[in-house]
Length: 259
Length: 259
DNA sequence: CGAGTTGTTGACTTGGGTCAATCAAGGTGG
DNA sequence: CCACCTTGATTGACCCAAGTCAACAACTCG
Image (cartoon, rainbow over all chains, first blue to last red):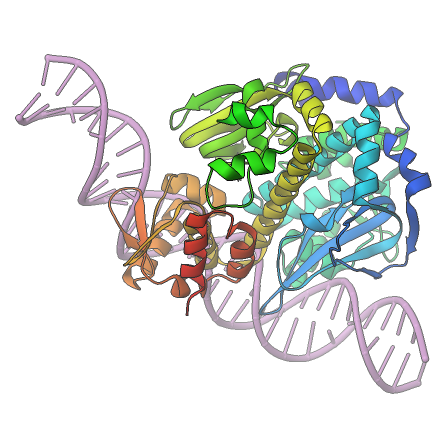
């Protein structure tokens, strides 16, 4: 309800875009398949980031990639998580000494030479628009992550991350939203700019409060979406940015929204 | 001048290289001038973020824009700083409740309808490439900012910011690099995710150590680039991302690099 | 089954946030 | 021109969320 009101106020365009995309479930980027090299990656597999003459564009089709950097002094940071549909180019990587792209979960990835990609995007206006929409969404997510790192405390950041996971990977059942946690605690901590110990403490706290339940290794259940949502100031933004692009997500979205 | 260059679309590089400076690399985005609405903004002027049917693309030509959000509980964050050449679209803004774009310094801005912009970028491959290069640089900077917020302590973040300013706005003289500080302390603090009080303390500390010197209101001098550089783990990345694109910057870059 | 990860928890420390007092710098209007 | 007000900046005293260090528990895989 708060989300709806808020959408009307400040982002009328997004609301209509969301409506449109319910109809157009198939993504135009799928058209690139015949020109792409399809790569299946195991968990922890590394990708080369050497930018050659003709840069390679990477499109995530399933799974989860992470872009990680290590600064001197054992300081690590996961800069971005790349979810299905996301587009990655080596030129997005800042010139830091120790950066690597790796699969956080088993993933399918398409590689396309930049020149081919651009030629296709120029030729097909639907594809071109899809490309720009996708890049804009990723910018938007980067800005959201900046807001999270800059303003939220540990618990709020963890809650935001869990909301993101439910929206991305959650499936709804009678007892709540259950989802895979495709990252190790350490990677999650690096993504949220928390210490692994602190993250563990926060997770324990959430568990004893019943906000999330452990369901075996790497799986979790959120019995009450509203309770989780109330823990993150970015909940509305996350739902409106990520929610409602597939039928599965739509139910998680409703689940999160319900009072 | 820009009109002239526009007529010779086929050889834009040569055309403006002859006029502008010793610089080989011209600015293909300057070609957009005839189709743009030119806006001059005073300090603190706000820009509307209501995205209409046809989204407007904003290009910063001079000055400095800032994208700020305010989360409930008086928490504010400057998400991005937009420097000259930067491209902004409303769709880059995350769907947060209270976001505003404002001029942090007197600025010149070009507005172009998205459809026009895309048509031109599709028609002129030089312009298309410049657009993608620019977007990639901004992604890269966003990632760098994430790394800074996630891993650096207050002093390192402030040092990184000062390095960025010297590279952007610095001019070299016999006694060091002097530059304008185009933001209030509060905005800087919001950008660096610091408290204004803490920022003030850090600045005082740097002043007493002689790393930066106050030169009147809103102006500063860095007598020794190396000393400043040593305070930021991101110094190298900043120099290689921002340095060496204009003759002025080149000298700041050298100044920062010298031992 | 042991070795090596990965996760959890406790005790202690600390960087930076909060609150409050004070000062400096512009306006603005009389 | 000055008195007044607002906004921004600085500094001190105090406090707390999260980091650090260390011990240990729980899994995973040769």
